[in-house]
Image (cartoon, rainbow, N blue to C red; front, side, top):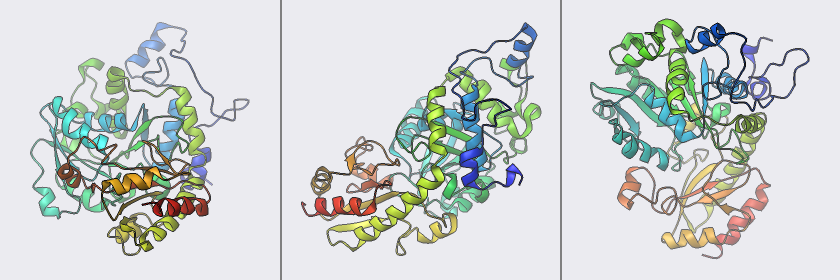
Length: 428
């Protein structure tokens, strides 16, 4: 069978690293900053982007590239680049096509750190964004676009609200305005959803989460579908469609075709900003990817049981998990996530913020950590932790209820997880 027809489970194990005769079967760690060449012309051709190869790990490293190739294969993209964090991935994905004076539109149902990056930090660079409700009508979202709008952004499954993005609707809106749709696909991973198949153009990941799966490394990834026609909207994207003087007047779309976006991302942004992961971290990420297809299934099975338990408990005020038939996002989940969503559940308890705190402090197996989506079940109260910089009004605007508890269900025995939740509920 041809590699292009491999199923996701096979790609998780086999893609990215193809050892030659006598080479290491396991992906090696190329723990080196530099790479040797025999003459100056070979090195010069690399600096001029005339040839592919390695000369400095800030731009490319064999370990990092092998893992990026695996993720690109899983998503069905033409190329990918690893970053040092998921935050860096989202920053790079946008900054590659936005500059001072530009604007983009984003769903407000996004991770608190991303909300701050977009609404505060990028503004300091002269890049503005407009937050919109992803449940709004197409006509309402259209009104947020401006002549200088360069992208539309959303999360496949929102963190922490667990809302499902209508990818086809967002892709249709983005393309109508001549801009790409960028989707953060961290929670479902490409095992459960491949946004490119629904019209998205660029995908980002916090590989810190399910892809690693063991909380051993912080990382991110940007993947390009290769489908967006930058030249058709050349006036909007001069960085890709006009000469880059830092590479002797090279124009990325003319020189690299479908790899234009990825090449600029590495050769220009990573060259200058340098948010690279270490080869050691990429190696650890690859170990996680090899079991991703097994783990994500168990996460979903456990989360489904926990969500069904919570929704039946009188002490629980509400539960958001798309696997529940009565969930507002169930129909979207059946369309985009037919094999399951992820292990993250959002719910609220009857009572006050203090009720949520008392419940969480009473948990024994389940740990309170500023993390989500690894093998161990963990819990967080966003209003007190990740989103504590926001007022209650801002929390609601971001789709985060002040009483929301984010429960990331792990791969332990589900009976033990349920027993811990039950005893903690008994103490409120």
